[in-house]
Amino acid sequence: MEATKKLKKSVLIRQRKEQEKAQVGGASTAKLLNCPTSPRKMRLVVDLIRGVKVENALYILKHSSKEAAGRVEKLLLSAIKNWETQNEGTSLENSALYVKEVSVGGGRQLKRLRPAPQGRGYRIRKRSNHVTLVVDSLNNVNN
Image (cartoon, rainbow, N blue to C red):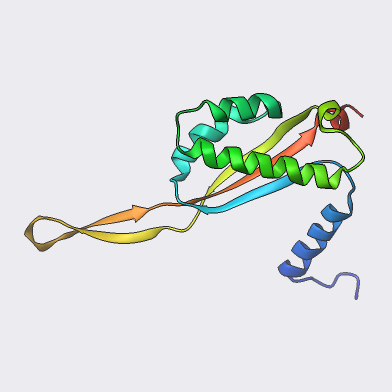
């Protein structure tokens, strides 16, 4: 009867995170929270680098004219550094890193009112987003 005891969601999340940390090597993650760009604009940039090798993704982001590309580039560099700290013995050149997953979700909205004719107010929603980027090695996938 004790074995079927339900756990709180927070406990399950903590256990899952501990399991992910226990895995040496493999994919590494970087998150960008409350980025002041609309999710729709961010997805245009993120779709360019999904599934691409890290070197090519950095090149694409460096030469993109979108403002969000600079923020995603910084996030990608952070994910690469996280991967390096997880896999200290392996070299970055031999590992063939690629962007495994990238997701953009809606973040907090700031709601403002803009004056409109005849005493009305138009609502302005200043959107933000959350970006999660996962980097993994092609060598780990093949094994």
